[in-house]
Length: 495
Image (cartoon, rainbow, N blue to C red):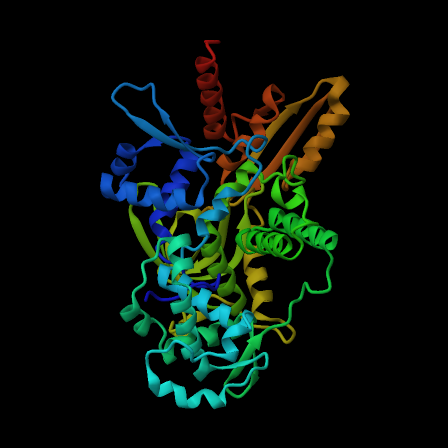
């Protein structure tokens, strides 16, 4: 059996193989299998179809669409739907569903959980056994709510044998009794019990005995459950980690439909007018949730991470860094992390979506580990030092870009008299930092020190003809804005 990785904090088995394709289709809108091969996102046509099948297992055909391209020499293309009004759901979170499992895992947990929820099996666990050596131990079986690990080995084998027709009908699984003997061993049962206990699903009721944990929703009515699910939807739509909340919300939905089938209304089944629309610019970051989780754990534990990063030219670079801060670009919804690199003793802000592989390095040299940190004060923690370093290196950062030097940018604003109060208020609320100087007659000078003047371009453009960069102090920025405006006017046929 493959390594089990159902806990969210662990690696998701083979997810990296589809992550790049999901990201590429989302970012570029449409692509053929030939283009994906050319971009080296898949190795061959056959591997493309394998990965496509995995994606289609979790993404409804309504969201992953196939269409015929009008371009000459191209065939079918694939694209995602991400219009928030036509598609207000977080469908990319579904791509994590069961990615860490193989069919043996599903069978194993089905049988194991059945042993705790079906009273038939603890009472008569040794019926229908081929191995007579177990029969003499029947007198030791107790019929209370908990079960001994030694008995579970036998019980799960019986459940598997007695549910062959169900498994075959629902999952097209052919019985394989030789495989059964290898699957349900004492060591594997014990390992699953330990894992489920660490997750809080099982509780150790005595030495070597376990039972299901208490149902935390037992005293909650159907209408109250719908309110709780609504609350979880709100938080996972606001949080930068979506997948855990998404699964919690889905679990509450399934629980409600199972326990209150008559009371469950269309709130769970058909949200034709959902309360929360999953924002377009947030959707793509979902597929990086496991990477973000590892970074957050490393920051919390003050650990070093080893990661591989895909540069713009496609080259894969490897780094050992000390992560200090998760940073979100509010304008575009992209995620970055502020870190110290041990290779060149410098600070960087890598983009999380460009991380190829990542892992926490617990064995990193402790002498070097905190070489970048200043001496700690009496009441300071390591996270206080992280914040101190972050503030020092980002005080002149407009958005997220770190630079080698600081540039002073000067912008001349001229607002119409009728709109002056409104536009001045907007200027004050949207500037990240900098100084506003009112000159009278609608004229305003704005100066700001920044490590990357190019980061100001989208903000300057949003003011249209009202904003002009000073050509004397910032010639490169002024020329860039001018060429961008000319290119836009060419595309619209103005010039």
